[in-house]
Length: 425
Ligand code: LLP
Image 1 (spheres, rainbow, N blue to C red):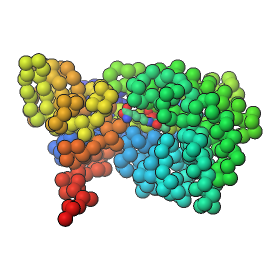
Image 2 (cartoon, helix red, strand yellow):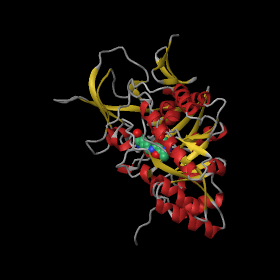
Image 3 (tube, protein in one colour):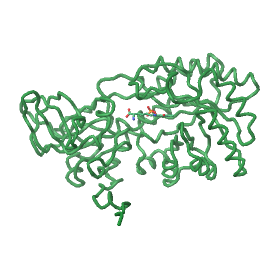
């Protein structure tokens, strides 16, 4: 039997005439659990993590999985067991890490709008670091820490003002973005942090954007951050760790992002040259750990030929796979059992009542109703951004580990959706 790996998706392959996730047929999983169904490969996630680990071999570094990419408990457990910390952005994410047994000291808390309740809870459980995003937040954090009789470990997220050359909605390190403390204000912010009674300065961090496929923005941002490290330390404030955030892209459509180990070899060459190579480093990768470790299996419901366009209507929709509607993002779509017949060009769309509910445009497919398709690169920012629009329950999720499938999330039912609602009278 011939095995053809799916481009960009380690551990997903066409074997004979069927798509497999590791040792299991996607078709069997779909029959057993229904569609739409997210299927993840544990080995793919661990392979993506291993690339970072190789890049950090011999260095002092901690990988904090940016769980906003996919915060399902079964996925968090994989990274917790592999020794990762977590980058969180809400109290909800904090509770999820604790629920899978993640250690509080390995959690870093990012985000421009942490509420007082979230900060109190994070102080209470003793997280490793608050990545503070404004001078106003420094004051609130210090007050809350003093009130709790604690000292909050802080890092200031700096905005290095470099262009990550990605979609504007996922660029975060430019001057006009809401994120981080402006480059020019950084020293003043650190001096204030060092003077506040409830804070202990432990590091510096930056995150310039997401789906970055070019190494140059990283190298530029690193230079700008290292300049700040020098300025802050010259002012007598030592920085124990340097956190470079996440952002490394994946191949959605033939993109060729640098491999994590190759990128970090280059970054360490710069760090070594500037005398920073032996520092403690942190990173916050999300998409590059899970994105190409997951696919969404969906069934073709109807084919609808049109005057201008042919539509292939599937049972997954923008509530399951929001990225095309939100960012005009491309996800490859392939048949689970490729047929030999002639292909036609279709817009692949979901059942939601919006013209924005499209998953792929102008795709050549040889399909008929009842066939299964796999929407690729669906491991990151799909389930974590899924909604219940049109009162659609969220999809089920399966984690494949070799020849075993673990149902890590049951399909949401109509009753689940109504559970927290009350009639007015
Ligand atoms: N750290 C911080 C502070 C972040 O804001 C983010 C992502 C990450 C780490 C992880 O970035 P990654 O390694 O995943 O690129 N929903 C969008 C992506 C939004 C990213 C937001 N921040 C999408 O579907 O493309």
